[in-house]
Amino acid sequence: MTYPALTRLKGLFYQLFDYAVKHEIISKDKHIVEYVEIGKATKSDKHFRFSDADIDIMWKNKDKHEFIPVILMLIYTGVRPGELFALEKRNVNLSEKWFYIEDGKNDNAIRQVPIHDKIYHFFEYWLNKGDSEYLITQPDGTPIDFQLRHRHYVLNYWTPLLADMGILQYTNMRGEVKEHAPHDTRHTFTSRWKDKKLDESMRRKIQGHSGKGQGEITYTHHELEKLLAELNQF
Image: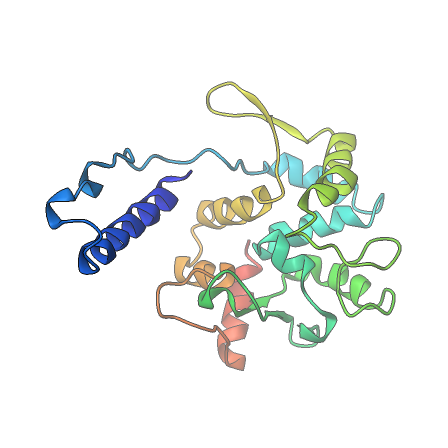
């Protein structure tokens, strides 16, 4: 498990201990949670960004399969793959260049996300395709349930498309050959944004982790214009 997950787990152990003492299940001198070792925080290498050269290859191949633009949509929005595949057409506002994530892993994930000029026509394509309520669908018109059928998407779309373009594999910092995972698109957005030294608070809002207590994120017209201007430098 990741260090943040282990930290939360240890916190749960403390709560369980307090409960057990309160209800006289154990005595207070049986406190052993403090001895649970979870190590120290280390920089995760679970996700690896796509290089600029990889992204150029995607752009050159965008017309070969309709799901190649979907990968670019993920990279240029920074959303979680599950958020994009759960997006309904009614929550896309093309005229104002944003879409709305109405459900997420926390309150901060409920937000408006601006649409980069480069991927505007990809959203337009999917909006006009078929009669499904969902934006992204499979060739037969059924939606992609990323949470329950993650492996189906990876095996049928992600892996073969990246392999065909020659950009599925990468070599990490330890010299190990790995394969890109869908969440690498979100990591790529973060890395490219920081490389260009764009406004960090705006990135956190776009990606849905702007801080505790922020809650649902929506913008005035002026705020959205500023956000779009910053995003289009990405």
